[in-house]
Image (cartoon, rainbow, N blue to C red; front, top):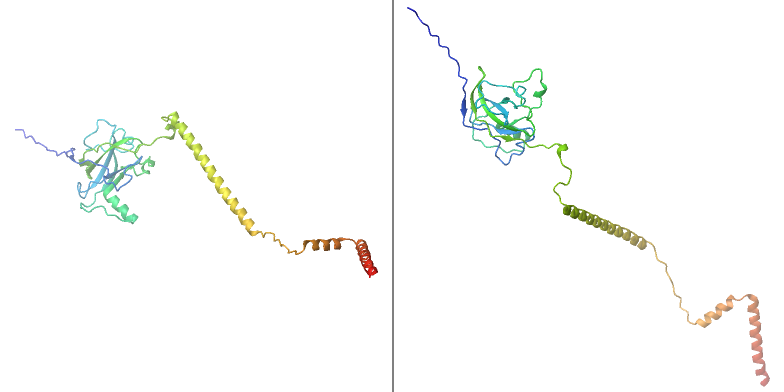
Length: 286
């Protein structure tokens, strides 16, 4: 009689539970810069994984086929070339307490940052992990590739077996803000027509003439006001008009005064002779 011993070995299942949830960017219009050229901000899965440490996986949307489950295939940023060949674990964060409290507005920068970290997570925010070449970290939240499109997944793994137990669906493709190289910009007018160029030139000339006229008016008013102030400060010449009652008498006096002494003496003799010639006949007639 042979006794057959059946040894049952329990092998843990590598199949994780996929939850019907997709990571997404915040939908609130009050939050700015949810996407940049190298980062994407995601809303944390509040009340989905209570009191657990959540891993964030990322992959470029160009990867096909995309594995539906992470399972035990956990690779790093360096191994996947930044998600170009497959999913990589970008970072981990602890879930917040499952509450229904809204986002608290505040003017304190520390309080605002704490509220943001409580509800949001930014992928691509670590620039130091790429410098650790000899000993790369398990999680590398390096900046995302410019002009690329990414998909993300949240997962919770067993810390003892390092196997993912619960995970979400892959997010819809999320594009980064497109960055244009300066060398790729076209400096030529492009779609501008000849008429547009002519109109622009004419308007530029008219604007230049208008500025010149305005400057001329300002200069004229400035120098005119300056000259007027100078004339007001200088005293004007004063003129006096004398009153002359007898113009003939004044002229005779002036003429006599202006004659030399000899002429004056002759004039006196002549006057005396004239006087004598006038008096003598009168006396004789008496």
